[in-house]
Image 1 (spheres, rainbow, N blue to C red):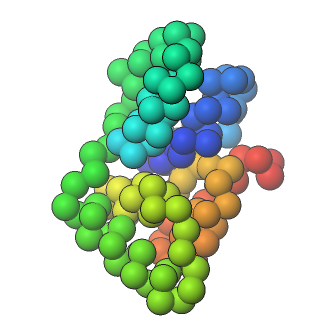
Image 2: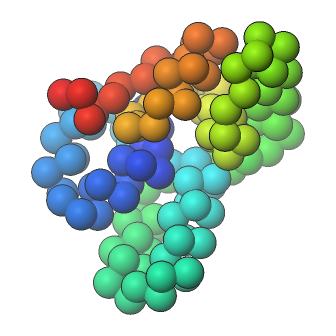
Amino acid sequence: MILLDSSFLIDFFRDEKYSSFIPENEIPVVSVISYYEIMSGIKRLRSKKEEEFFQRLFTEIEILDFNLTAAHYASTLSARMKAAGTPVNALDILIAGTACASNIDQIITADKDFEIIARFSDLHVIRYSDM
């Protein structure tokens, strides 16, 4: 499985060519945190087109819950990163915790915070914006 970050989902909405960046042998999944980020943005913008697109997508793709195990991983990551003086966006840490709890070791994103997170975890970052 490969986790699709919010940045990727937004770019995928704009141009479905981005689906070519998902490795063929991987099953794409989304964190419930990314679901929250996407849907709160849509509700703020009141974009019917985006809402219809993402509602359809979110019924077709597995959405991973943020649970106690994910919270454990996220809190460990957060503490280690803060101790090293490298804090990042809290929602990105929650997304990474969700990935770790689900034994997912890859995330596709354009968000540079995940490169920092990767230094403190087993998460491998695929930056599609560099391809």
